[in-house]
Length: 237
Image (cartoon, rainbow, N blue to C red; front, side, top):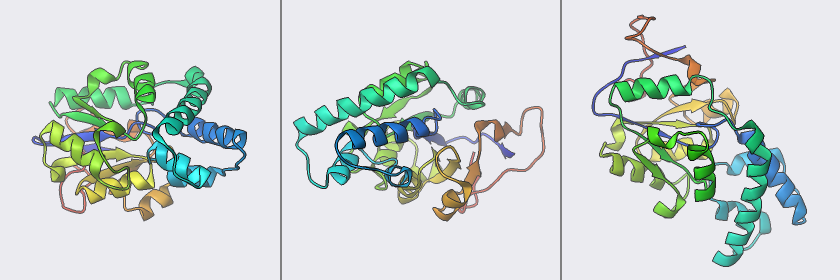
């Protein structure tokens, strides 16, 4: 269990897929079905290795060539529709997330989302689960130039929130996302929805949790004066 003490002048930035929803298996399944339809075979490991990148990266790696904007749009729409069809019956908020977000709001900690997901999928998740109201900014791939592991999306979110990168904690599930957050100078809490603990640890996550249920407020019922610290010696969450 990880105890946290809300601090002033900090922000929390969340990846979306695999963090705000536990949807990794459905993205993997959708990519495998999509690739097979187009004459290619992808393994689960290949999909997970690319996780967190923009769809253009996936498409060009899959096809082995560059794609035009029009072709990319058509391929994206096909894959996105397949994913939403597969995941819609299972769409839900992870255990502990609602309570954690409520506590951050009570502590007046600004929260944002930074994701490589296309706008239709952002709407499908954030509006479909009534989560958009919890975030002061939502940064998608049209708002930055380079996808994860580049730090662009997280730096953009921090700038909108008005918080220095060093005072931001990122919640991630993917190796590329952890690398992006560290490149931005931010701390990372990794969740084991997509990758095993050993992989996240090797990627350099500052803290690893299996569920948001593990986050407990030191000002709440459990008052032990202990919290994990980042490499810089500051509380993670």
